Image 1 (cartoon, rainbow, N blue to C red):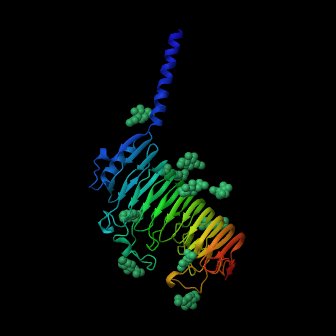
Image 2 (image 1 turned 30 degrees about the vertical axis):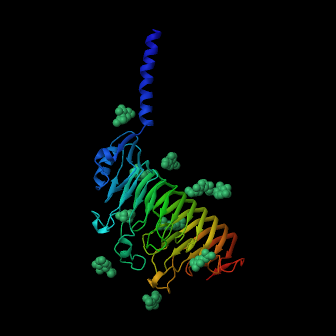
Image 3 (image 1 turned 120 degrees about the vertical axis):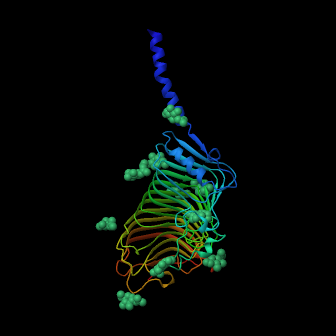
Length: 383
Ligand SMILES: *[C@@H]1O[C@H](CO)[C@@H](O)[C@H](O)[C@H]1NC(C)=O
Ligand SMILES: *[C@@H]1O[C@H](CO)[C@@H](O)[C@H](O)[C@H]1NC(C)=O
Ligand SMILES: *[C@@H]1O[C@H](CO)[C@@H](O)[C@H](O)[C@H]1NC(C)=O
Ligand SMILES: *[C@@H]1O[C@H](CO)[C@@H](O)[C@H](O)[C@H]1NC(C)=O
Ligand SMILES: *[C@@H]1O[C@H](CO)[C@@H](O)[C@H](O)[C@H]1NC(C)=O
Ligand SMILES: *[C@@H]1O[C@H](CO)[C@@H](O)[C@H](O)[C@H]1NC(C)=O
Ligand SMILES: *[C@@H]1O[C@H](CO)[C@@H](O)[C@H](O)[C@H]1NC(C)=O
Ligand SMILES: *[C@@H]1O[C@H](CO)[C@@H](O)[C@H](O)[C@H]1NC(C)=O
Ligand SMILES: *[C@@H]1O[C@H](CO)[C@@H](O)[C@H](O)[C@H]1NC(C)=O
Ligand SMILES: CC(=O)N[C@H]1CO[C@H](CO)[C@@H](O)[C@@H]1O
């Protein structure tokens, strides 16, 4: 009786231990077992590994081993049955010529419709934008430009983490996150030269609960740019520079834009950047949305041109009509503890809309001095 009882207990517990064990050990999908070799395009091997991983109910891990790999393009779509990780230990190179990508209008690597996804490893995704693509990227001056691919594109993604990887020399935006919910970008390195066009570090829009933390972003455009329809965005301990700073906007040009609320930029440094934190909206533009609950705290500026700027007359290269003001309303802005130096003559520049004046803006403990005239403390520019 006792023996029978113990043995049935073992029979009951053993599968639980095995089940726990298989859950704790992810199933590995190494791209080299899918035929990836260093001198050929690994896109097919990666896609085949992905197809196997998403049908696995267990936790799965796709491994890109150490070495240099060529990847023409990959669109990895879920949903998967279980959590999926891609660990990049190597250097993944894009084709230098954007027109040699199978679909030049699509992203380089896109991961769409997944829940519980992790991108990890200390590898590099190298867009090789410098070789050919940047010369043709004129989206900064031409509204009708041909769009180059974004390097790493994450869309419709929930409860996921992108960590430790490096994105280098993207042909266009480095990383974007559209329609993401609870996605964290941690310990990333983004590098591109200060004069590379439109190479925004991380662009987020139409998302909620996005964390960007402990990252170093050096690029030719915004380090982080935020589009419309965002709530609960936390940007902590990001070092930006060179680059155009951390920006909300530009907004206003699209009538279907939606509100932004709850942006927290804290403990960030801006080194030789064009801006520190910036909110930019277009005049003579149709959108009437509200940007509220915006917090900028504990920021260090090292010769940033515009440490804090609200620019509701954002109109680069005269692409708009300044006579009709922006219709976007900015309210509940908190700016606290901003220190350092600027190359300009102001610490804070507020250029609010005459149609929708900024409301409830509180600024405290701003200590910015001129980088040119040492020790000269600077104040506000209001217009
Ligand atoms: C996946 O896990 C199940 C139990 O949870 C196990 O039976 C199966 O063998 C695992 N598959 C692989 C490929 O590890
Ligand atoms: C992400 O969450 C949203 C909202 O809960 C849900 O509609 C969507 O199906 C989820 N996506 C995935 C890929 O799980
Ligand atoms: C935009 O560019 C496309 C092709 O590149 C062209 O067909 C179209 O006419 C252009 N539109 C405008 C408004 O210039
Ligand atoms: C957010 O996602 C992480 C996994 O990346 C998960 O551990 C956490 O529970 C999620 N938070 C919420 C509120 O769903
Ligand atoms: C801030 O980020 C840097 C770069 O990733 C990291 O080395 C440092 O430890 C982080 N600081 C804190 C307080 O987490
Ligand atoms: C923006 O917020 C306002 C005030 O909360 C609300 O009335 C309006 O409908 C919102 N607009 C959109 C597009 O969600
Ligand atoms: C910012 O830094 C301060 C002091 O170094 C620290 O107390 C605080 O927890 C940090 N905040 C965030 C959100 O990292
Ligand atoms: C700008 O808009 C105003 C008022 O709508 C209009 O009178 C003017 O002609 C426009 N200017 C240009 C250059 O389009
Ligand atoms: C500050 O930045 C300006 C350009 O914005 C540059 O000309 C100047 O040399 C920089 N000064 C210092 C002290 O780095
Ligand atoms: C997103 C994106 O543009 N990534 C670029 C990253 O770099 C590769 C290589 O050039 C490009 O193809 C991608 O377009």
